[in-house]
Image (cartoon, rainbow, N blue to C red):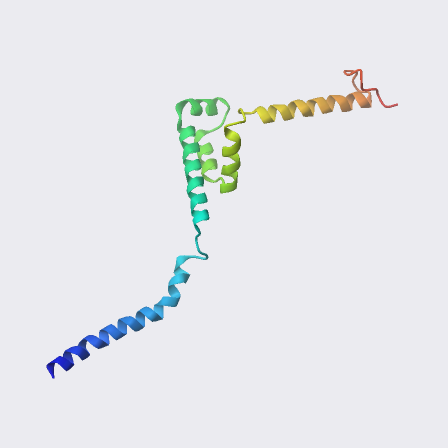
Length: 137
């Protein structure tokens, strides 16, 4: 008889714990987040974090900080902006960072715009810089 009461004593708490676990089981995915994580997104996030860390390390370099200050950029503000870049912006920045010299694309664009302005001014007859452009009369 002692054995029977001991079994009954252990059965009720065990049944209660099993019922509680099964009752809370549907709520556990809701606590996990809105979607599942796949391996590709985890690798992409790790790559973005690595790129962001490398950029922040470059900004932390004394020579880079001196150049930023010379150009009128606050290094702390630059670090904040790098921290707020999206993953797509980081990928684009990293792809062009190794190949484009700093400011090269901007300088070429400025030269092209100035050239176009002179051609338009020549065509309007305001200036006479290019011989191949005749003024409109």
